[in-house]
Length: 330
Image 1: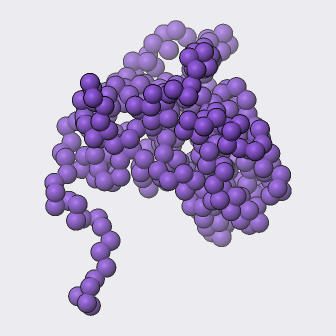
Image 2: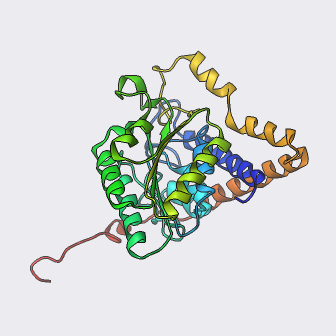
Image 3: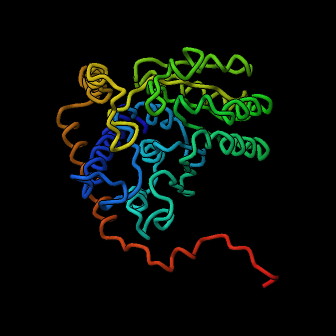
């Protein structure tokens, strides 16, 4: 993502993908909602509205840098350059998927771009620190980035990881997405302080809070954090204010959320705001925008078609790719 127009394109690709996945996921799940029904079984957590976090940070990363992501992972995976066809096939549970359909949407792994995620809250912090520690021992200037929601900042893994990263001056950046709610619990009812970024002081590392869901502000903060890590100066904690336009999961009734609050988020949609900025500064033309919308739609539809056409696993596949220790010395 070398230019602002590239950043805008990536944000549009993520948004189109998430909106289409919302539609695909809903297939076969009405009138009686069942997470087991339809072409995409299981839970689904979408990140529409949170594009600035992924794009603003990952634009400063290289292919050899490591990213660990949470249960809401698509925007990070796409921004990191994951194979869109194979990711979508994985989400559909097909054998052409990244993990042959055995991981699903919350367990995406692509070693080619050093990306992983987990459905366990706060699970990505320790592996990111481990990768960063390895980079330092190998005398490499690669970095690791651990993304998680603000609810994960109350997990023990978060504090343990910050402590070790600060102690070892590990080249790792911790990024907290503050989308206001940990599932259905407002941040002020779950977290003792207003900003998780203030917790960095306890570990002697920089902490930065980025307001407004602004991709350029995120990019500026991330640029400094990544440069600091590459220079051997240790970790940084970034907390980025953002919003999610869908529920915590697809099927979430969102009874905890007022209509006025959600409409306020929609009115400050980061994608049209960034588009208007680019147009006003002559960094994008209406024709450029139209071409981008066509391109991202084609990419997403191609990935979905590839997933639909990919074979489903056979029952015997449940016994492959599984650790099975030998019994009785055999």
